[in-house]
View 1 (cartoon, one colour):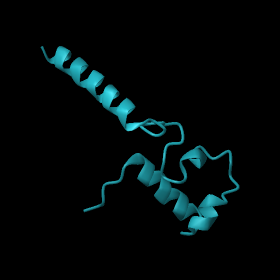
View 2 (view 1 turned 180 degrees about the horizontal axis):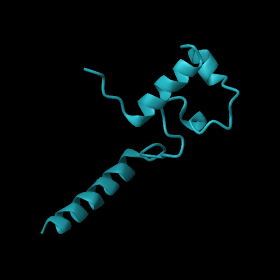
View 3 (view 1 turned 90 degrees about the horizontal axis):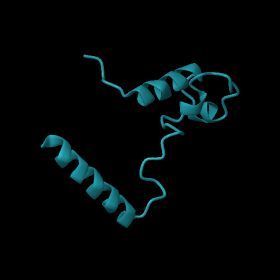
Length: 74
């Protein structure tokens, strides 16, 4: 059975394949017009997620989302 990969993991694996398995070469990739280039580290550079937010802010956001989900479920 093939291993299941997330799309970002698959991109990372493809970039490593393109650069003959060298992580250093992936980092130094000169092909900036490649559509996978921004994702070559296996992360979405455009996704902010919870980074840069305090625990208190994340708790407030979680509470707001929980309340909205409860309302939708009724």
